[in-house]
View 1 (cartoon, rainbow, N blue to C red):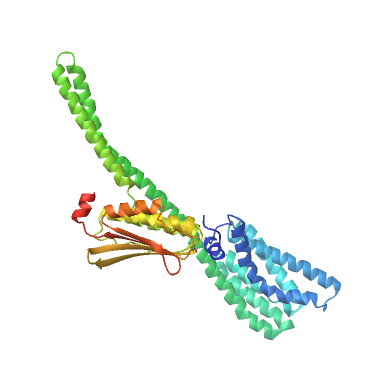
View 2: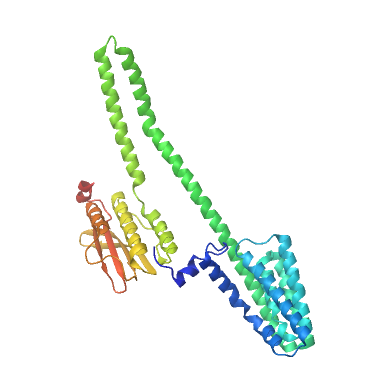
Length: 394
């Protein structure tokens, strides 16, 4: 497995999903903690000595309750949110603490309304935020009129803008969750469709053959006592049908086992991302004029290259490219896999690259692998038009 990296941690921490390990927990806590910068003014006000001991203690307790409520709301919203009733109750706690603290302790506490606005944008339905966020800004401004009107006027726009920005982030989180569910549903439906296709193909391949074998077996059994010659003919027919059925099944299984380039590209994106490698992978390959054997050889080349990147390279970036080129030998489809790692294949090719070279040569292609400017690069080429060599290789 590739070692964990900081940039990969940010990519692996899925939006809208509860943290699956300590690393994701730290990343999400850091992401939320960055926005606690607006608490510097209340903390400085408490430590300045301007208030009495009782007011300082009450302010500290109120600030701790406010921050704990806010973090509970926002952090749970990024994973498993509270029930609507509990969410409204916690928002009410924030809506009471922020005005009380700002009114009692001065303008340094007006920044708490930023968190009220963020909490409303993150947890309330979109329609409710249209009045809740402006209401938070209006209450903040009215309280600021008593202590520091210029500061309240400067914070008013910030409170409203940050609140509605969080509405956009919440919408993005909801969309991401819905897309993840849709993708899982599509994968499930695709698996069901593949099972149905396999069952249909096996029925078409074996249904007629097995029915014929059963019929001829019954005929041979009835003919055996009195007509052994005719029974022997039926047995010979059974053998011929069985052999043909075996050939058909082997051809069908070979087709199912043949890797597809589009599927390998999708698997490449998943494998590299899971290993903490920033992947640049083409979405839809252009396979016009590419024979099945050539496509299969390129798919094997991609699988082998990605395996080397994940297991041996130590890379944190990988670029996959598919390019149609015109060469002296005719048109080819070129697959390039380049990483920025320091490991990978040494001076002598391993068994994987040797077998891959043989597979590509059988399809009329070629393989190049070696050190690049910033890492390791593998280039596989296959012809995009059937030739006599490809046919004989098949």
